[in-house]
Image (cartoon, rainbow, N blue to C red; front, side):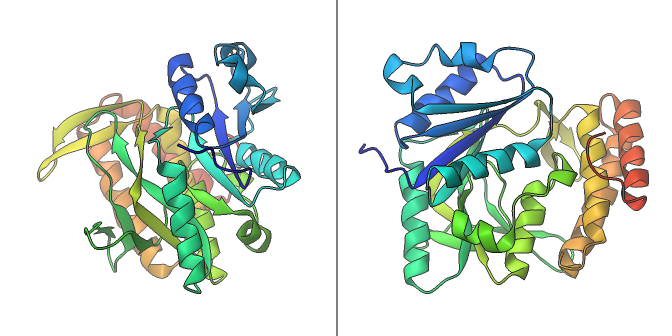
Length: 307
């Protein structure tokens, strides 16, 4: 495949990554983009040492920003955005450290973005579907219904669908839109950063789209368990501290006027079900529920930043 020009700068945020997964992501991105930025959030291992395992021809195409400590996902994204602007890029592509794009993902995202703009759409970001490492199933995009999130199916006749929000990993974001919408919210630290920015974009008159033909490999959670909860469900399991940020940041966003009332209602129902599910059937329930309750308390106290 022909290498893309410097208009797109992929930004990978790392924190104690698995070397093989990070190299797999980098190799695929470097086959599709001229320059990749890695922002490391204070890993215990040397990212620079890992980069030495890339082919010599690729190493000079990777720009490393190494933080001395973990400043959170929002600050890392913003550092990547700042460097992309210095490099005169038109887009940033956010990627998790273990997400691997398919060989045509960047081209599909870029093509869809340009096509939508040619139709007169005000587009802030487009994102791919992801194939889950554990289940091999393809994701669907989402919109907010009256009481819950609604799945948007990719029909064969549609190349893209208008979504309410997309996950940060794989999202292609216009730097021009960022100038009007603003950067990522660093105070949220990790969870809901993508949700908040997408709804802030929509409040500023922009749209978000999912691109059906753009696909990447992606993992949700550290592991998954299969449980019966009305039906068999595959549930992502995280470290307990993640539930603190999920619950705290939900509460923080409930208090923001630009977040849609329908999303707030659907998210409250989701958090209620989430809490009772983890209280009843989850492993490590004491630690998980304790972090959820702490997150709720800090959210209502309007406490933000790092735990």
